[in-house]
Length: 182
Image 1 (cartoon, rainbow, N blue to C red):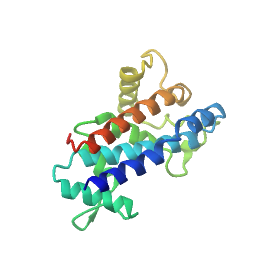
Image 2 (tube, helix red, strand yellow):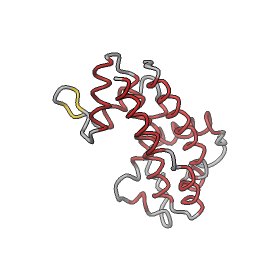
Image 3 (cartoon, rainbow, N blue to C red):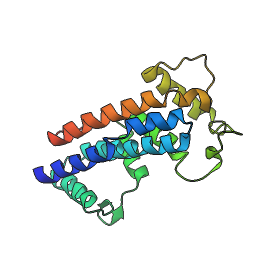
Image 4 (cartoon, rainbow, N blue to C red):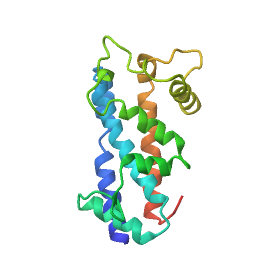
């Protein structure tokens, strides 16, 4: 199991290691969908690491890590684990992860959310979604409460969000390496 964990952690670290420089460059070039796609990679890794930390059965945890290493889908029994299934489990201990996950999902598939020049991708969010986003951005990244919740204002905080996702991913990988459970 130790080799499986080490291989899994190494795989995730390799995937995430070079994400910050391109993210900054893409934001400078106003290539927002691509920047969010890079953030989405780290969110996906964080979601998986966080989910693994909720599993007390080390054999089950190891089996999921081995499946990822082999490029297979994650299953519990015969059911394929979807990102939304993992997010529902992780939600209880790290609600903000699901909020960032949901934000990233706005840009996962081609939609009107990619038309930054003529429409605000956040305009279609419900007031609850905007309030929740404002809460997390304000609480963790000092987003001013008196600033309008629109894409232009929110995208400026993406580097801070990416940094938080990255630091939490590193912490969770450390916890996996040390066989902890959350």
